[in-house]
Image (cartoon, rainbow, N blue to C red; front, side, top):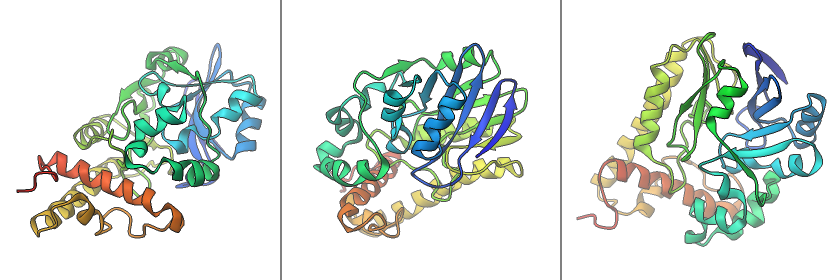
Length: 295
């Protein structure tokens, strides 16, 4: 694992594997108390790091399963207290809350999350997980970090900017190979594009994120690429719509987002199809089109 200082008392923690659901990068704030923001380096490795560095609080950036998985072990096997941002902390307190927040319950596929995704990711809900306020991060860093609210990927998603060094921890803004992800009903494309625009307006010299290595060259181009991917997908969705594919299912069947729906196994195809359909809906809603009333 790489440790890179991005501000006084703030380190970027780069996981051994990038673009992996089983790992993500994070930040370590060393001050009056030691706070870790995200960071999954392998279940046992994460626990060992927390113990060795005497981390007292573990702030999960947002509630998506690749970020909250393993937090139940931190809660039960260390002295560190996990917390989730105030907007989303209730979403992982129970399976019912999670299934409603993600839309899995309405789609009738939460059993696949319980049977396939949760075991693979090492996920369990945490009843009563504490919330944290975003200004707690700024206070803990003694002003070295500035919170940039960046919804779209999730309701409470944010980025962290270190103005003195020009470093931006973009979290899940979409810098990895897949690009921006908005596969739940709560995702919002207008907000997502606005968040990308806000990141692009900062004087960023070093770019860090959850699932890709540090970027120090053509930072502006890396952020612009997120917007370009969305625009390309948008054009493709609208092209299918105006060529006569007037339902979400029909457009999703063109595999604009996931070329293979069985990448997680045959049993998980309905999950991937659900994410793909949710992304199609985001584009249609952004275009002001209603798939329920196509004519």
